[in-house]
Length: 375
Image (cartoon, rainbow, N blue to C red):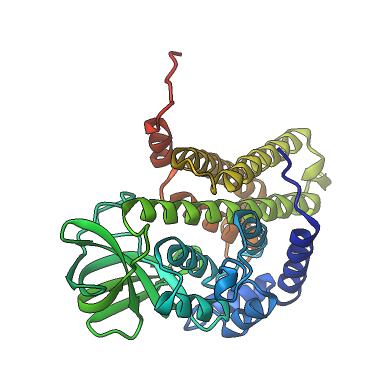
């Protein structure tokens, strides 16, 4: 299987990297994190101009119909630069509309605004006490037709306070359905906060909040799992970029840190450690690329199997590479003054978002065709 990017994808990646290297350096990123909003409208406008917001949107709604491989290219670069803008949240919201919407009327209009960077989206996957179970929903909907009201709480909604619209799973007459809620709707309380990796998240409390039900052919439990798999895949791709950046930062640091009159990069034992770090990153990259290829499979179990396998391997790599990087940096590895500490924090959060290693191992093992072998 050929995982080589085509010329167009590589050029897109190169253009995005040039922009991030020039305008989104570590100090610029830290200034954004410390700002009141935690995001930058200037950089969001630049992302729109580069075509990032239009990339995942279908052509019929003014986008480029970018597939998983195209998005993988983008997320790797965003992960490498530790970008804190609400791109992942919006991309997952776009996929939710693509899967569960009708592609017409209000759904089409919202996709068009998202493509133009005028509307940011977020999917409210999580609820208090549900941990990683997507279907443990206490949020309920009442009403008839496509207009309902929601009551319930969603927790750790990534970039929830920065979104203009939320995609919200809820129970309607006992069945799972997906709803669109506007940020300025009545009866909603938003509590915004910064997470340990510099990103933003929010708690959303709905109390009779007006909502519009998504009425596509696929807008139930299977669709929600499909959307979560897309979000997981993008997180794995972002982690690959962060792993690359962390490995590079560690090698650079060991070349400058002196011990016994020479750079510690010359010590064979530490060279072996850094080779292991590279191997972990390359294995995570390969399985993430495979998951991107399998995401569009008509066989849902094949998609689930590939995505969970990638999340497991990426999570293992994130922990190993992060811990080794901190060890090789010494005390500097846990300070806010170096990018390595922030890369490790981001990787730690990615590992626990939409299911940790144990969760995805269990999901993988529960899929048809898995055969346990005796040790």
